[in-house]
Length: 173
Image (cartoon, rainbow, N blue to C red):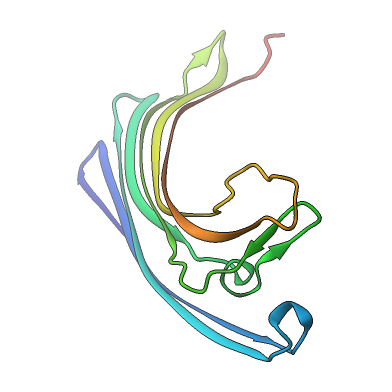
């Protein structure tokens, strides 16, 4: 992580990381895997970063913004085991890739005195874009029939947007 303050009221923070995830899966012969032994090994190598800045507008108000990337590796069940319940039969997919995310946020923080009492206010707008989202091909809704077989896939992307607002204050006596 690197921190830099190019001006008295401005602070910039950045960081980067590299993750190497190894998955080893060994299964004894059972009916669910065709009565054969399974030994699978998978490795995911993913880099990610984050950069953010805070600017102090006044003694009690600051604005901030940040951007970052992230990922989620497939689970062992998604890669090698699948999932079978009384309502669904989802096959595994050893060719899945990690989900990737790109996010951005910006907001304002204030710590004013209200009626002589300390308080805080924060509002943040955000957007999160996910790619290679992992879901079974049935989607969110099951036909409630275990003989209907689906499979885990990297189905595409999703976008999440929102606004978070928080306010804290002590009650007036």
